[in-house]
Length: 278
Image 1 (cartoon, rainbow, N blue to C red):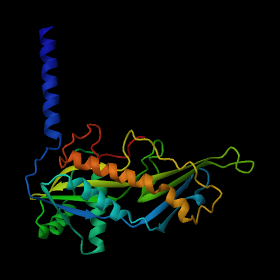
Image 2 (image 1 turned 135 degrees about the vertical axis):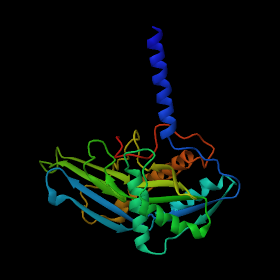
Image 3 (image 1 turned 120 degrees about the horizontal axis):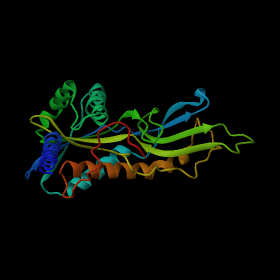
Image 4 (image 1 turned 90 degrees about the vertical axis):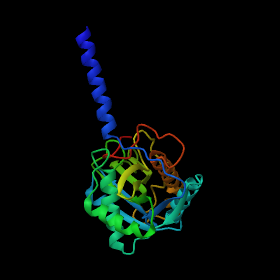
């Protein structure tokens, strides 16, 4: 019995040690910490339609709307960070569109879809973010951006989704004038928030708008009789408040995970990995 107990104890100690070595360290930021905000959200919404029975019915279309979701996200971040007087917020705007594209791909998308925790940061992305943030003398950088990746919905991980807006899918063709058809419409937000410490640039935390264990946001009153390839703004507007909720919650979790708020972070959500289950 004693040797078995010793073996069990050594395994437990080893597991705790490995967990401590691989987890992301917590940082305590002093008064006057400057927090850089890089908001890469696009101002338009995306409708992504998928069909299980006819590939010609698959398409993606973007729409200009007056929601101004980038400003909404920025105001939410300002409100949540503003509750802590330690921080001074600084807006950082990349000077070139190619910089925004590379930051989105390398420092948001690749990090959120990484199979390791903490993620391995791409050197090119690290150099770019370091170069952009240095003139602002910030100690923390927060990136919020949409990204492209597997569908966040269960059993649909093979479908690639990007941006935010409306996700519709026909699972099989309706008969008798639409009777027995199975169609669904959801508000979706393939959006992530990633937090870094500077000097040297180090990953701290992340959160995704749609995460494991969260319920889907169906649009139950979606008008399937409308021209699905040319939707009216009133149809798109049905997704707006759901998307705002997604963004608000992602910001809260990212800030908690980064120890930028006083609340304890949820254990199950690191924001890292492939498409989460429903």
